[in-house]
Image 1 (cartoon, rainbow, N blue to C red):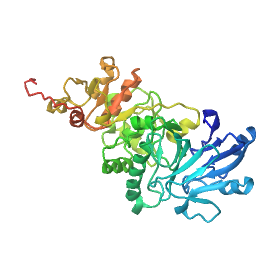
Image 2 (image 1 turned 90 degrees about the horizontal axis):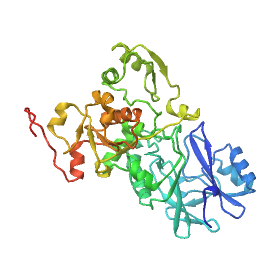
Image 3 (image 1 turned 180 degrees about the vertical axis):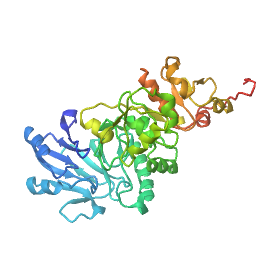
Length: 410
């Protein structure tokens, strides 16, 4: 059978930030994926279509909710599909890597994708030889990967390395393959918050900063560091300004925003609002309206919109205009040939001079993301931020850096 959007029913739990799925198999039966214990929405969707849940697949042992698969087995006789290595103590069909289940026209293939958990499976939905979509659970998610620290600090790096290989495996699927993830915005198991709850392999290859990592060590560093630039890129409130809460916070706050503006802050769990207050007070910024309780997930839960910004490595960056926002001395020491130079502190006043579709860059990516947020506030669209600096860009594009001497000669 051909699968259309009408056959796939996402069931979003906004409180937990997770998505379950009900797949209409076209013959009165359905497949449920990562159903939670509260089955009211799932059963309502099944009743509307006069469906019986014949299969209940779990991608992994969940840390943030109880599975509804056992109840589906009890109520509807559903066959529970789960990883054989998970050693679940209830009736289920244990699947290993490459095992397939005939759904009656469609097939479900188990792909071992450890990382979020040891026994994690992704489920590839196939129609003949065509890859329709993949249920990725807590492996590949929108612009990130789910956490690898839930089994303890002593396992975190090991699982992060496993996640690297799982992500690469999923990225090898055809670009048109749909990605149906479980952990989304607001999930305890998710990494950076985002606005999208489904995506495609191709979209993630273009925008996911973890898939852009050139090697395993870089991937692990990015995943475990939770870099502010990557989080802002994954999703942020339209018109917001990206200033990471770090030692230079007060400097950039004072340089980029007037002290007369009322300020509201979006901070992550674990960040101290008092630190924001003191950083602002010490430079005379006292019109502090507050901070967004619950952060971006709360904003999305309340119906607010969010946008993302492309954050790419040098080999993924287009050959278009290059905007360098570093300070003058950094620019003089080595810059991409033909780059337009506008220091970050002056960018707001000269945003109109920035070329459309520019690659915005600094030395690593943090200041460039701030610059991109300024440009977006000024109405620019299609901005791309370089995860790296001029040396990486030049090497990837076959260029040699230009320099400027003390007399201004190049």
